[in-house]
Image (cartoon, rainbow, N blue to C red; front, top):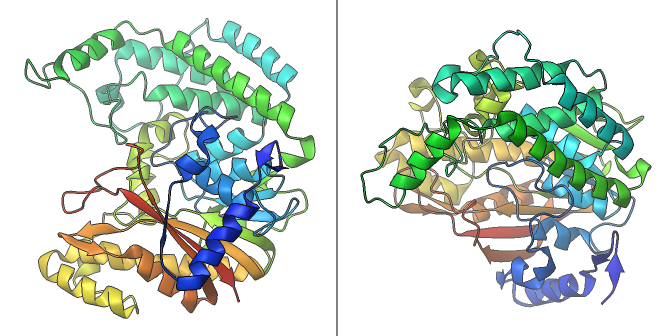
Length: 460
């Protein structure tokens, strides 16, 4: 079996077989990436677990589509316009490609940057020692702009987090400070009163479950633990774990391979100054990207802004007054003013319009959410088409959902949109989801998402 990149197993022959099979009959091919790439089933690989994030992309998928010379080659530029916490970006670097990502959530961009750009191990080790000494003295400082701060955290927890945050903010080195901020963010939910089983913050309460319920004693134990929790201990344990992960990554990547470009909006790919390649223009030039691999949020998707709201507040990445504005910029969002959906939004996709007409009669808001999603996906595809070079490949991971009890065939609608933008479908796969992190019921009118569609396009 041949090896590619950082000891990676090459997937050329597997991909060629799938392409031939699909070209022969144009039928969707069932696949299990977990079974094909079993050696990836341990999630703690390099820095992938540096920070939790809702609905992470299965690492096997970008690995499969990067570990060959058919879709891209070492040195090529790979774009993920919905990069989340950087799964595709990290796998891109490990495959010896250049990585560019975009995400509307500033926490996602921060995690992606830290995850893919390990600092010098010696400098990091010295900084950890200095920080341990610095946080022994709790500083007087302003409270963070976190919505209902006292509702989510016990007073002693707030005091300890403030001491850590104040000490981190005194660090002049941006790279090192960013690393510690990501570690702090990873601890925020663990020491909060939010239910650890849920992606979005929901406060736990004593007696929340009736006696005899399987979660009753477990929940009460967790709340008792929070009253005496060692916040500093948890933080520095996270620091040590993440230092180890980044040390392994720093030994794997050459210094010149640690540059990652980061943009804010997939619909307007402008690279931010603190996340750009040296010499890279702030707006990606047309035809400058060799390959795109991405998984956009799904219709009525995970509530990313709400799920990350505590960290956004503690790290000062988004004022509480701007959380709704940030959510309003996110693809797949669910909150709309009634005035915005009194008149039906047209998508221009005939098959989707038939489904949306039926949904609109039952629930106009759900119809508007789905229609807005497709309209905004079209804008993102237009930008992807602009920056991707001719004959470049575009791998898209998506999922269908149910609206008001009816299946909304997103994979078919996005295929139509991609073809509208000058892409040709080369391969269509479907993979069953086994991760509970992705099998999430998005809202009361939806169903569990239990499989993902992987569509491979080529730009004409």
